[in-house]
Amino acid sequence: MKRRSEHIKFLVFLFCIASSSTSSGQLDIQETGAFGTFYTLERSFDDSTIDGYNLYIPNSCMDTTNSCPVIIFLQGSGSVGKEVSSIFNWALPKNVKKVKNLNSEYSMLIADTFIIIMPHLREGQYYDNVDAVKTILEEVSEKSNINRSRIYLTGLSRGGHGTWGLASRMPGVFAAIVPICGRPDGISDYEELRNLPVLAIHNIGDDVVPVQSSIEIIDNLESRFGYNFKKAKSSKEVDFLTDSYVFISPNKKSHDAWTKTYKNPELFKWLLRFQSGQ
Image (cartoon, rainbow, N blue to C red):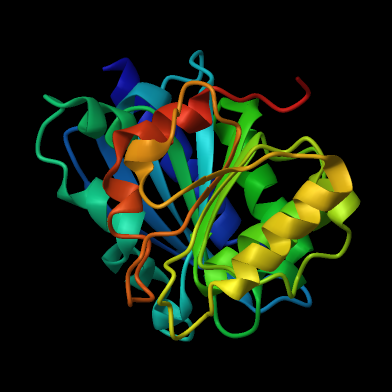
């Protein structure tokens, strides 16, 4: 009964956002499942190409007495310019929607542990939309008891560029990042990436975003800060309990380095090792 009450309170809050004079938005509950609820909020932001965002709120996080970690997931180009809810067809959001029970460690981690925020791009790049991303985070935090020290950022392809870029332009916000096949274009200042745990993934044979893009970033971080990245060909070579700076470069001829990555429970356990401000 308490969870239902918290769900209704959150729903009223989202309606208030959607009907506010600054947003001109439209709310849609995509699905209310046994383990959580999927929301889509279409709205505009000042000077931004973000046209809304999606949320997944586990039932366990509806109770505002529980502080929950957050994953911000950034889409690839395949959803850019499409419906805001199209992000649910991709990668991590798609996997969460497929969960039928909580019998496995993986299901518990992705469906019953994190609040997941999924901003949507109409066009452009995430790293050019810092203010909108900050606004989204504030809107969600106003009604959800998010753990401010456990906000994680990940994205694929265009979202990978955005992961690197936003992390450099929002210093101190993220506890760890997972950029997948990303470029360095949006990195405004490498100094702002100092001491930020990184798990980067990029296929050697990526013919859309060359792996050299990630290698360039890793080399820069190592030369500037003295990091010694764990360089691996597969996740099996990584010690997720001790390695804080990781670069996985599978020997595959594919742009898709995300499908396997987001199905690995060790990734989410790795994230939970870190808190910002440590």
